[in-house]
Image (cartoon, rainbow over all chains, first blue to last red; front, side, top):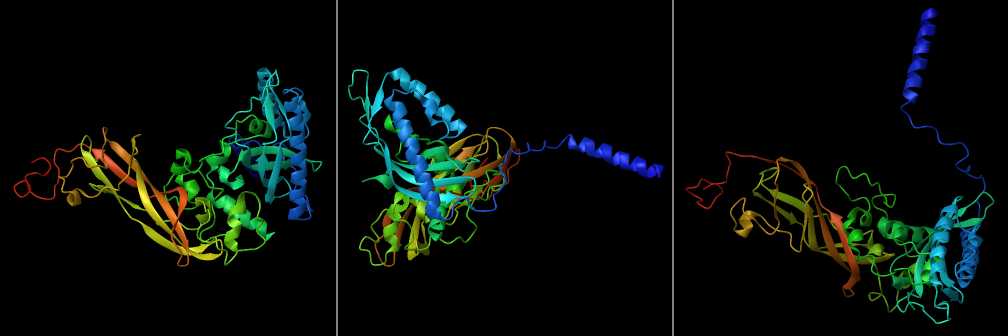
Length: 180
Length: 267
């Protein structure tokens, strides 16, 4: 029996030693458990939810730049924490220019790329033709070479409440996709 | 649901990852003109990163950049399906799915769309084979020319013709060279062994080197008996990897004696 105990102890020591070389376990609760039921009933529903979230995001983003970049935290709850941090940096720089925007950013041609219980991806054609950049004196300083229609691949993360938070926004393809 | 699969297939098959990471564009950046939307396929970085463009066709060992964008071998190209949404970035593909459309054969198809067509990889060769002498020229050359692949493009019978236009060697010693020609053997060029050729390379130090060759192709497609239509951009495909040992040599085995080949090496 004594030998068995000794052997068991040796195994324990070995396991403890080995465990020192392994990766620490991931923090519990960092990954949401897969839900039993789909978040959306259909592709159409996923696309509609993403379109609504994106429209809301554009509305707030326009409002912030219309205010010269102030109040960037209004995007909180609409974008991921990482996106918010980046956006606040950009708004701060925009504020330093003294410029503001006028008009509304639109989008069209939204199509679903993918969705699951964690993310929704869509393609859109962003249209900034209705937005002008004005300086302090109200002079239009919109860059002449600004692309007005931009194909974007947008990804949203679903938070625990089922809200869609904008997680990335990247140019997709070349400009031809959204050319008119 | 099928429409989603079609779009996802096109998306996953074709686009280099560098495209996404480097091209962030938020709405506020777009309004202030900070988003660049042009010429991604002509971006050198994307082109040279060939294994992203050609999923599952990177034979080089040690390539740990596992492609989450790989398609399984034999993946079909996007099937014709009237349910493909004719909007958004894929809109310019929609017309192809309509047989009898007068635009067929003349519309825009990008290299992304032909990811299911893969050019045969070129074959990289070297002279001498497997060994060389430091400070002398080693001759590299590639075989494999223009060729046509038949298959299905967006549900239609189609052919894609690939024409190699550029050969890019990475010699494994930190140097690279890009040539608009594939090179050839010393014999074929009438050049003495160990003499410089347009594609030769000199290893300055002894050692073992791994040589990679990427071949850049232009592509054209056609449906049925229609005309060949150019596809924008180029496609880069890796060839086989070579291994060479560069050493010193006091004695060199040559093809012929100096009496028979007075211009041979060492004569």
